[in-house]
Length: 246
Image (cartoon, rainbow, N blue to C red; front, top):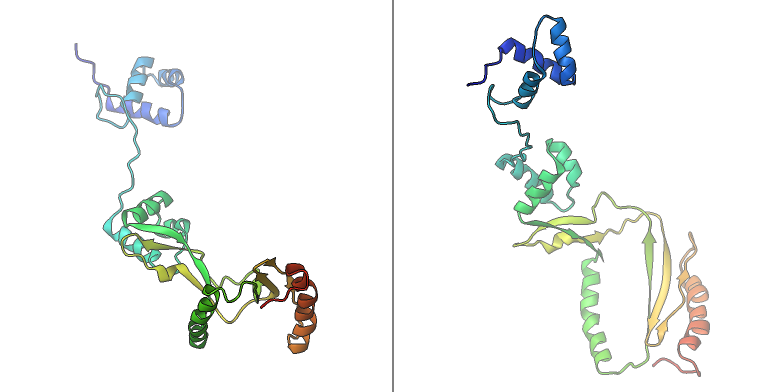
């Protein structure tokens, strides 16, 4: 025997009470006060068929469809990340009103990968030419074992801020990578920092020597605060028995 069709008005009233989070037993009592007699089983049937064709025997199954990545959205996301300093995935998702997981999926579909940048010194043409001329000569000297005992020293600045809006990561294509994008060049204009002098040798490293903030670095300062302590303390420790570096 076919199931009796539920009245449209009755079904609408039951759905209204279900959306207000009323339990099924309470819905039956409320409708009874309004002169509408309905069983708890009928209320249960309406609840099961909510969102589908009325009187269908199939229960409701709720599913969340994955957002579709349209060609327009994919093109915008690719243009946003295909730069030297791309924004974060969270900010991109907020800008285009889509989820962060969708942004991540678009990046993978476009064959981009996230890489950490490498910091290098920014060289002027004259610096690059000097290194080119001196590097081969130094290599030949070391390769022929001319210097078995050596000490090389250098000084460097260290900074605690001054990112200048540049990110430490970037996106590059897997098939056609742009490795120049992975390099962060340090500009000549720098924020506040401190200078450190140090040396390495064939027998170990020297003591770290910090340059006082605001000190005028001239020949007198370099001789008295760097070279003299280096020659009197570091050299005898690294090369004992009065050995001298060649």
